[in-house]
Image (tube, rainbow, N blue to C red; front, side):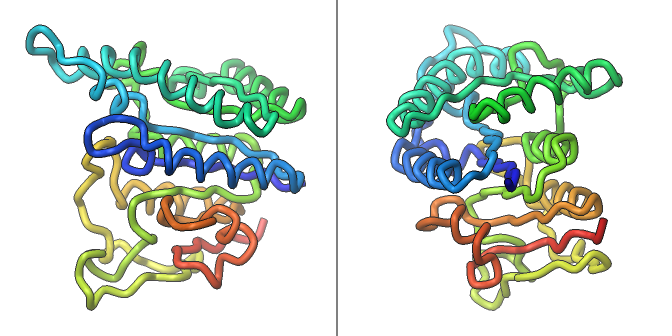
Length: 257
């Protein structure tokens, strides 16, 4: 049995107005359901709570960044997980919500408890839907973003592959909007691609391609294959798992364990 960690970003899960992008979410769930039926164990690390919450309420007065994040995530996470429950439920798949914090990975006991919880879910056919608990996380104790969280989970659960779904096809030799830029299809363990990474970050999330690349290199160094791909492409999950070298994406070749 293969174990796959899938991280999907806010730009794929939400529309520009902050409402959930039900079309993209439905396609994502459909593909995960197919993988589930093939015998894969899947963990979904899902952003989107803050973006969904932002589309639901206009604060009555000015809030600082922390207060905004707590308010929006508390509202948006409910919408997000309920929608996932409905979509997965139509395939007869049970999901479990895992809201976690950096503290849960900082001590041996907490780390083992987190790992045991998620393995129990997987071994009982449950799809864990994971997100950082933004309502309780303080800025200095937060993950860089869900890319970092997905990398930690992939390593913790001895995954076979980590798939990071973004709004671009992968790592490019220049700006993705530049027609002269080339998609980097394969990153070998000793390749240096830092010169290709733009410093910009996601318009809805906290991370960017630099974070994705750094996490991918660390996870690949642990012997886990990593793919960065565009999340709204048709059957992208199935394709990057079954035929990554024929699919537009950047494949980080794992170090031999």
